[in-house]
Length: 316
Image (cartoon, rainbow, N blue to C red):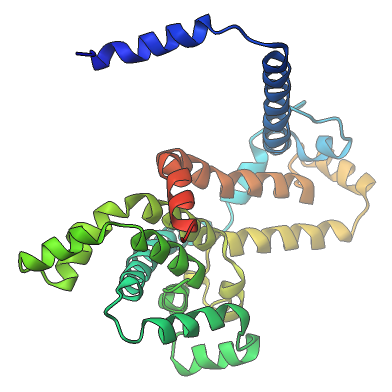
């Protein structure tokens, strides 16, 4: 009888004894070099923006900031986070992301489960109607008029209700559910379980990889959205999001600096003890502020990401 605990060691020992050919060495070398280059290309922009955000704003105009700040300061973060409504906007962004993601993923999964059932007589017509919305859209003005008639303008729910069902996410989840063994569902029905019980206690747990992947998609989209805030809630400061407030800060900084030259900016900086920000420093600071929450969430969902995309994106 083979001891399963000894298999990994034996496998490693067998692999280590295998003689590498010249082609293997060339392939591994090229592979390592490509991965190192890819890591540098991916990491450098973020590290560069972090260094600029931690550097004195007027000093950054001179250039030459690469991986670490030349004149360290937290002034850029104090300027951005010290703006009025910024904490309220952060609260709205977090609430929008959490509530919008939970409701959207749950409702999309329910519709996907319904469309995956062969006994649902409107399965094909409903699927065609959903897919058509991916190619044909009412346009900006009809959408605005519809939102206004629904009474959602000036409401927090304007961020949630119009975006409950994402058709791309719906297709991905439905394809994943189609791949689940139908015997699980049939056994549950024989035991007397209803459709909602089957969905909650069998389909949802088995679909965890694709649900985690779609949750990441929806959360990133909800976190980064600002245009709908501009359209529907720009006159309601207590409902604006973090991204919208940061966009306003950048616009105000651009407008203020457009009225004076870079020389004036240096002079103003020295007169105010370096208390001047620039569009470059504000953009770098905004990039770090809006990226950190998603970067913190991503490692927890990474293990489901590849499995969810590969299993949910392939339909035989």
